[in-house]
Image (tube, rainbow, N blue to C red; front, side, top):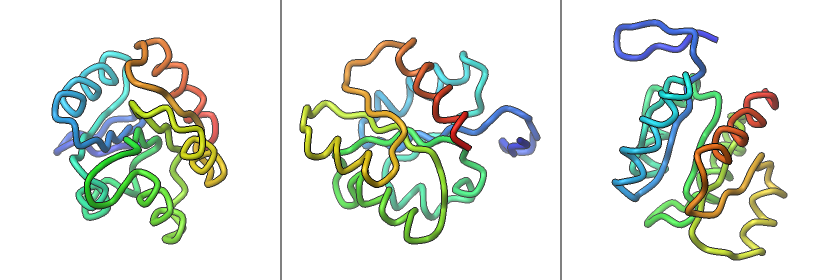
Length: 131
């Protein structure tokens, strides 16, 4: 897979992080880059959808609870548009109904915050095998 990062073309898969938590938006892409992936961060579902990176994204790491468009809403919108992107949900809320809904709509993994670096890497590896 070829990904365009700025003016640089890379063969690393692009992982997009959508989370309204600024600290997570800054730290997760750095960690993903350490793992060898290309990474982008977005503060909302709307920002991600209006970006030029939707088609290039090979895995979406998505917060469940965000103001405006929730993670589940973004998942539904991507499905409506025919965009097939493996999704790893991350959340601080232990709500089994939300977890079930996410999986019923095609989520690949569901991680509860705080999660370990290795749990995230394992989830990404599973997600990238899906495509």
